[in-house]
Image (cartoon, rainbow, N blue to C red; front, side, top):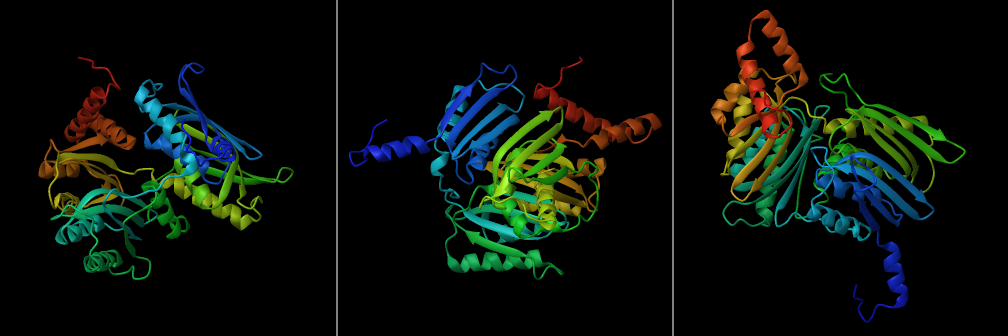
Length: 440
């Protein structure tokens, strides 16, 4: 490492002390790669470390977090999406480099795009109206993420001007965008809580979505329909002798679960001093020893209940309901408006969406239910696919209840044909991903 002439010995020492030490080990564990991070402790550094790993779509199978005085030590057991240890040197080098610089933070920008933030009351067809407005105002949607929870919606949409391909900086046009989107979000009965804002720079997208829903108090609202019977079990208790509050979470394991939990604790101004994370089968078990940033534990029963509510919301926001549909086609102006309008016209509601474009290709993921939040009818899904294009819009995931329903209908001899075709699609996709073997 080269040092500038003006950097004294003391500055060098401070730099070395504050620079995280990262070790990636493939020898210790037979089933996962160990990522070890030692660093000076500061608020938010655990979240940044977890964020680096989850942004690479790595699965954190186990983790041990401990802070001793002003020092912080993390050990993560990680695999790729297929459950394999990490062997790609470019990925390993990226992790080492990224984790080695997290202490100094990083600026977050939208890469030459204009960021639109939307929150309001969710309803069938809302996304269709939003994307129709943007198409009409000559805004090209480059990326977007949409979450819904407890009847609320939060979305970050990154756009650029259709004609120039540049960020939208004209103040009058920005005012028009905000005004029209606000009117869409208000609808007939959301005059007060609908919010829109425009900026040129944002924090990490998914962290920002958590923050938006937290400010919107989605955790304090009752769900429109109770579909989920597998809610997270969360307890909070104080360990008075050591001055900690202990948070225990048991829930279904899924991608980015640890990020969602740590993100919420961090944004609520709690510091994680010690933690143990473990997974077994499809279950996740987490225990956190936390304090406020001022060093005190949770002080009251209402505060305990608020922590439980907020963590339940953090776990559930990304827990997708409905059928997963993937759209892969040539990108064109108005594509999202057309696709989401087709969903609306067929009574499908989008519960979560991830929009992205690569060069001239649109790569979009939608989770859809029927208008009442129930499982969408298989015939409706096939009808939508035919309108949008069977080769463009594909069924990638079906809830377990679909397979159970198909078995019942096969036994009764009715309605099997459509569900069988969907089942064949799923099996073919799993085969292509190498997750099942061919029986032919």
